[in-house]
Image 1 (cartoon, rainbow, N blue to C red):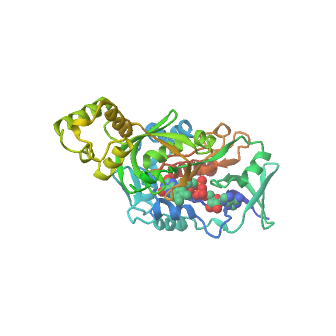
Image 2 (tube, rainbow, N blue to C red):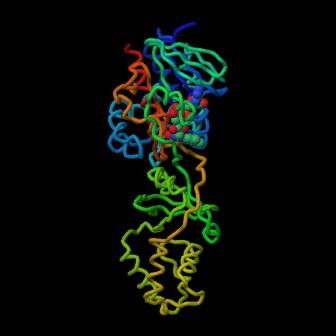
Length: 402
Ligand SMILES: Cc1cc2nc3c(=O)[nH]c(=O)nc-3n(C[C@H](O)[C@H](O)[C@H](O)COP(=O)(O)OP(=O)(O)OC[C@H]3O[C@@H](n4cnc5c(N)ncnc54)[C@H](O)[C@@H]3O)c2cc1C
């Protein structure tokens, strides 16, 4: 049986990036990838709605790392070695032209994830690939790793990378090797709110809303959907609250400030002024700021404003109710829904187990971890792939040095 210098379990973003960079840096090494599916890079293929949001335009490691609810400090250090700027030039140097959109997300100019895949496949020449092969168990024979697969095949490797993404079936093998693993919970999901009146407003969006669940508060664009709420503000809340919301079985109170204006006293003064200036007009015909007539009508109904109530008749209590429904509207969330563009899993191998300089295990210097198998995850915006590329690059540097 051949012994691999470097063997990768998982032909996804992180594993593939590690393998091709190691081949580039040390062409003499015998490298292999074991992948349980019939094809590699399947998540890259569907990522970003088929466009692959490859990284983010933010280049400062300190600021970039703030987008990771789990793994921020670890990655701040790792990004000094290979950050988003390095990712950008890595792809451009290898013929994949990139562009940065207004919100900071970086995509291939082709708007197709296939450009990334084609580039990776081209660079993987000389790397052995074993498809439809699931790794089930790992053991050690002296310094060598012995890898047992579902089809009874066995591999031997001097250095091994586990890059199995969010598939937690490898965890039992890792438990046997005494790894500390943080429990797996979903991140990046949207909220179900069983309120038909809200669902009727599906499609209405707000540029800079604030959402709060308990002590966790997030800002950003917000979207009403036919099941509840979505948009970057909700996704960020789901990521930062991944463990807390799981604990509540996704049944919790949500508070929403729909407005970009955060000064509540100013909102109150504006409402009063508008009603005073239009004493004979129906309140329902006097939308606040740039809110749509449909949404204002919903706010009025929620606040108990009658159909023919005039501006002059809006009393203190009603203004307080309108203010509450605009800036601190209360909802009962009853569950979560998948955000199809991107979803990730929080949890995985504890970062206490990993050397940040090499992504190698502290217990076993010739065992590496990269990508989502680690307890690292981010909000949307290209940050999850960036973590995968960073690990892949750093691992390839260490493996090719030895
Ligand atoms: C729909 C969707 C869209 C996304 N879009 C984006 C985006 O645009 N930008 C972004 O930054 N992030 C995006 N993400 C997140 C991103 O895809 C992941 O964070 C990233 O793929 C993680 O890389 P990885 O290498 O750790 O895992 P993966 O890419 O999932 O690769 C793991 C690989 O290991 C294989 N494997 C697992 N267990 C075994 C085993 N026992 N034996 C052999 N092989 C095994 C799997 O089949 C898989 O191919 C998206 C996620 C989803 C689900």
